Amino acid sequence: MKPLIRFLLIATALVMSFSAFADGTRKIVKLTPENGATDVALSTTEISIEFDKPMANTSSLFADCNTGICYKNGSWKTPTLFVVTDVKLIPGRTYTLGIGNKKTGQQNFGAEGVPLPPVDWTFTAAAE
Image 1: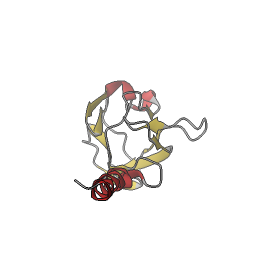
Image 2 (image 1 turned 180 degrees about the vertical axis):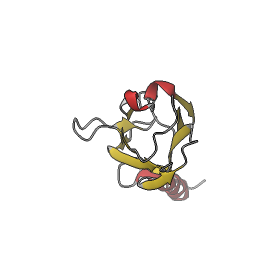
Image 3 (image 1 turned 30 degrees about the horizontal axis):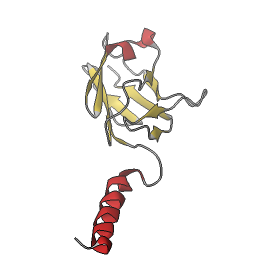
């Protein structure tokens, strides 16, 4: 293969490989329940965060474990983190979780080391 053609093929492959994080960050694809959701079913027993790529095994979710939502109940099915709730959601309660920590600047990182800036995640349980 001619050197110029080989170079162009390699360059194209590199551009395509890195286009997912061209802005230098990882992304959240889906939150369940959605960020800002209201009227979340009281029967909800699992919440999840789907990332655009696999995350490092040191990724963390900040939550008040006294609310029944705690990272200690987390499990991965890459690229999604699932957290099982310890207790039934409290009617009308707004839950606030941190994916990373805005106060301390702690970030989560993709498996390849690309950061995910901290994100606040809130949702409100349905009234009874």
